[in-house]
Amino acid sequence: MKLKTNKKAFTLIELLVVIAIIGLLSTMAVVALSGARKKSRDAKRVSDIKQIQTALELYYFDQGSYPDDPTTDSTLGTTDSVCLDEDGFGTACDAGGTTYMGVVPADPGVDSGYVYTYETTDGSDYTITFGLTGATGSLECTSGYDSTCCTADENGITCS
Image (cartoon, rainbow, N blue to C red; front, side, top):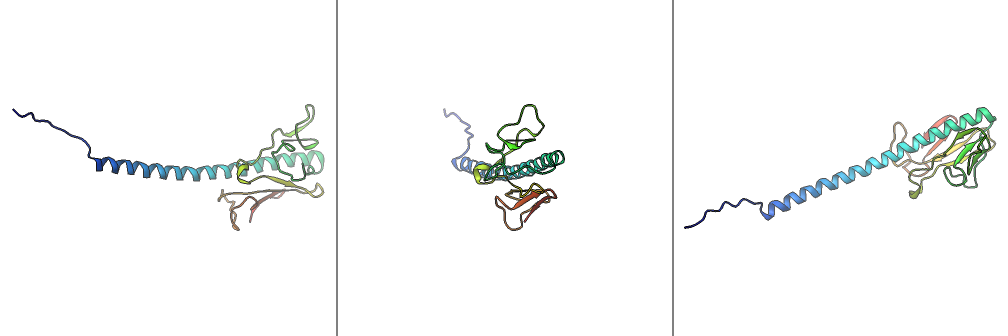
């Protein structure tokens, strides 16, 4: 007597097609996630600059001028400019004084060469230079996205 077996299984071709489709979908997800990370870093950059501008305006109204450049390279968020108090940018805030910004933020992508630089000539104005990697809100670098395509001053933020 012959036993009747009912074998139902996937063929090798069917399994390979499913694996290929899953690989394609996961690749597309990783690419989309990379773009979201860039947009997130750019949004953080703009938010950081606006917070620094607010702290600088508070400093100006109390002190009568903007603080001097923190260091020779004037990179914000580094060891020489982690705090903004009544003495200007420094390595730490004074315990008893006015603190305008307890932690000066650094660029979220410092490893990529993007930094926030601060400059002032005589304390009557200032310029913060920073970069974007893509369009963020109404800010867009028309000359190409790089680490210095945007500037912020007492009048607002512009990108070239």
